[in-house]
Image 1 (tube, rainbow, N blue to C red):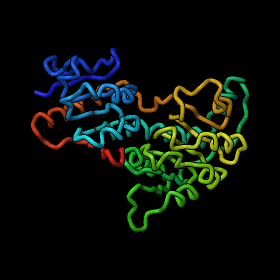
Image 2: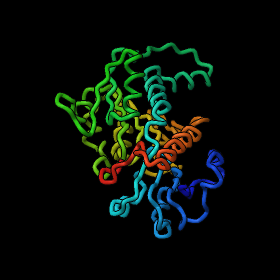
Image 3: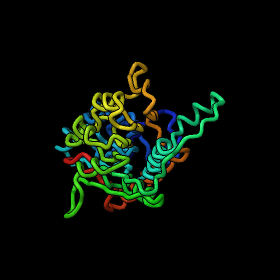
Length: 296
């Protein structure tokens, strides 16, 4: 029987679903390490004790904080929960598009002021949604955007013949959606030159990881109104410091990295882990295995 050491918050309720005989409080006995989203950086500290460790499972989809330089030299398998949060994140993307298309900030401002001020809005129908990173999240965004009558163009890491490049996607899109994992090659993927290549009427939406965007370049573009706006669920520094200029901009929609936090999100993640644990016990192939070289 596999023994599981859980590196999760004390109040992580779904942990109760693990059989008591499986859980261990000893890293030395652990075959499996279950890692909560905020604890990935601590894996480096516990590895020396975990001599029997064969598998690390990340409750989150992002694994960029795991110590891959060390893990790549071991036979420890790494899995994550990619795909489990795609629907919630895709709904946030649609909400962000509607926020700008219907100028909902203006509506709320006028409502607070009891001001009757008719104005024109735009339709999402006929607009172009550009998806950078066509994995589970990107595909969930595409399905919803197409249902709204939008044109969808996408770029993926392993391009096929005829696929647009990231620069094609950025230049053509009314909404640029970032849903690619953070790796050394995607750090500041959305840099100053790519932000400058966006349409002046375009909106940038980031539901992946903050460091994929050069935040300084984005603030400069937003402050000068060189692009229409941005909707951000993730940031280079989290929590976003109260003195950060993003807080002061009226063409930004900010979310505190909770776009995928639904009442059942942790339960769904635990269900997936338990299913994978069953595969591990049976000797079957695990699902959502992370490529330790590519880091996603």
